[in-house]
Length: 387
Image (cartoon, rainbow, N blue to C red; front, top):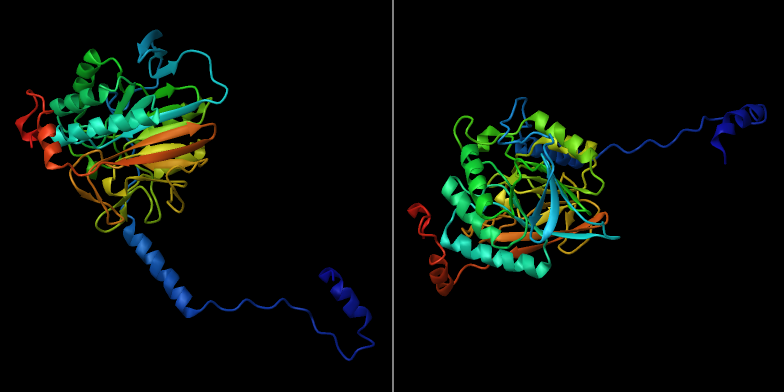
C-alpha cells in the first residue's frame, strides 16, 4: 500500500468508523547499554593509540626533497635500456607494450654494512631475479653514515638493475648525498630518488617522497636529517597529475592508519604514528599503490586501504595496494603479529590497474653462513659494523 494516501482514506471513512488512529513507524529499540559501553571503550582506546603528528609547515632542503623542475634532457643507458633524464623525471624510451607488466624489487631498512646484512642482500637479489624484477627500490634507511650507505648500496647495485634510492628517517642528508654521488660514479644504475622524483616505466609511474615528517623519529640532530613538510606532500598531487599510468608512491614514512593491521602501528603500545596529510593527498590524487617502509614491526604485509581494514594476501591482485616490505636488516625484530623477522624483502607487480606482491623472509643464518658473511665485509668498512 502507498502510505502517502493514508490520511485521505482516513478522512473519508471517519464518519463510518468510531475513530481513526494515525499510522506511525515503529520506534527503533534503544541501544543496549553493553553496546554503548563497548563503543565508548573502543573510541577511548583508539584515541589513546593515536600518537600521530601530521607533516608540519616548513621548507625542506633541496638535497632532501628535490625540486620538481626540468633541466637539459639527456639519454642514459641503464641495464641495457635507454632512458631520458630531464631534471626530476626519468622516462624509459621505446614503444609501449599493449598490456605492460612491471615487477619491482623492494628493500628498506638495510641499516648497517654487517656481513650478515650483505649476505642477506645476495639472497634478496636472487629472489628479485627469480621474480623477473626490472627495477629495485630502496625505500629509506640505508645507513647512518656515508661509508655504510656506500657499502650496502654498492652491494645492491651488483644486481645490474636500475636502483632507485630515497633517504629515510636516519640518514644525515650530507652523508646520503655524498654517498649517492660516490656510488653512482662507480655504479651508474644507482639513482638518487631524492632528486629523481618521477620514473615513467610505461605501465606504472613512480613518484618519490624522501625523508620523514615527524622530527621525533629523525635520528640526526638539528637540520642534519631529511625532514619533509606539508608543502612537499601537497606537491605529490602535481606529480600524480602528470601520470599516464597507475601511480606508485615511494616513501619511507607512512599514512595514518586506524586498525591494528595499518602500516603505521609501532610496538609496544600499538600506537599509530602516520602522517594524515599523506592520507589526504593519496585520496585527492587517487594514488592506488604505495610503498611505506619505516615501521619495521608493521612490515611484511600489504593493505588495500590506508586505514588497514583490509589486508591483501600475498599473490592476490588488488586495485589498491599499500606495501611495507619489512626490514632487510638481519637483526632479529619482533613483528606486530608476534612473529620474528631476521630480514625481509618484497616484489611488487603491477599489471594494468591491479597490483600484487610477494614477501621473501630470510632465514636466520647458520654458523657456516655466518662464516661466509664475515668475508663479505669490505676492508674499508667501519670496524663498528663488523660482526
